[in-house]
Amino acid sequence: MGNGDFEYLPGYNGDAYQDTTYIYSWTVLSSTRVISAEYWQGYSGSFSIFLISNNAKGIISQTISLNIGVSYILSFAVSVNSPSRILNLRVSIGDSYEDLSISVTQAMTWNIKTLYFKAMAEQTTITFEGTDGDVDNGIGIALDHIVLQKNGLSLFLILLFSFCFFYG
Ligand SMILES: [Ca+2]
Image 1 (tube, rainbow, N blue to C red):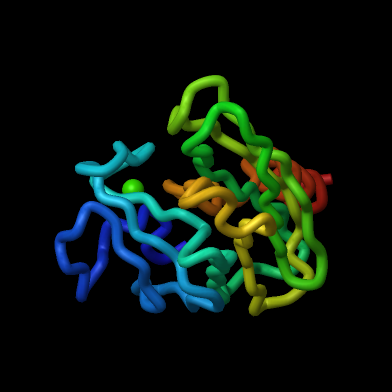
Image 2 (image 1 turned 30 degrees about the vertical axis):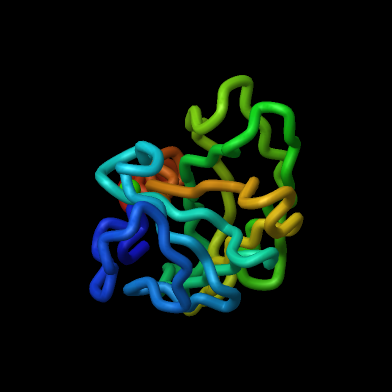
């Protein structure tokens, strides 16, 4: 993923948090909020984002190139800035999606979530949407450190299969 850590933010004005319709590498489908470490420490680096803004849902997406048939691991850090809330995050990968319940025991402690999928197309759009939007004055889902990797086990099996085929 390009800029999966939200650290490259041309145009960021230095506010502790800032609503934005532009995040480098991402398509911002619905205005999202950039959070600096001054406001809340990101999982990694100096910035994270909130999937909320001005009483609305924040939605971001990125279209990436994949190898068809290869398994991937999508992992990311999520949090909520209120321990009493269970909020919903929808992660869409191409035509399929997964709904995750996000809650924390302490505000803004980070959890890592992991999704596994097999690439069905060369160009795939991955979308993150905080489906509850902005509940109660700025309570929402925070997101950071989005990483996409090939699933090592499937790569191992492909290599093993190739080896057996070649020498078998
Ligand atoms: Ca970050």
